[in-house]
Length: 121
Image (cartoon, rainbow, N blue to C red; front, side):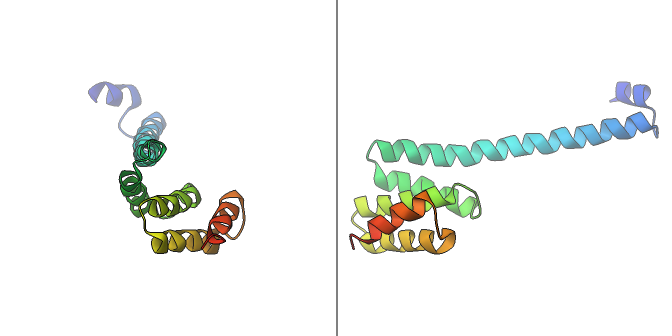
C-alpha cells in the first residue's frame, strides 16, 4: 500500500485512477463469483436431470430461481422445472410451470415446447 502511495501521491490524478481501477477490479471479481454461482446451480440441475434424478435437479432449479428471479436462463429453467414435476408425478405443478413460462415470455422456442406439453393435459 505504501508503495502505491509513493508512486501515485496522496491526491494526484494517477492516485485517483489507481483507486478507480481497484474498485473496478473488485466489482469484476464479484461479478465472476456471481456468474460461477449461477452456473453452479444451473449446471448441477442439468447434470442431475440428464441422469434422471429429477427431484434432486428440481432442488437446484429452485435454488437458482430463488436467487436469480430475473436471469436470462429462467425461461429454460421454468421448462425443465415443469419436466421435473412431470417426472416426479406432480402434473399440477408441471402445468403451473409451463403456464408461467408462456405468460412471462409470450413467444420463443421454450414457449413453444411448453405449449406442446400443455396440449397433453
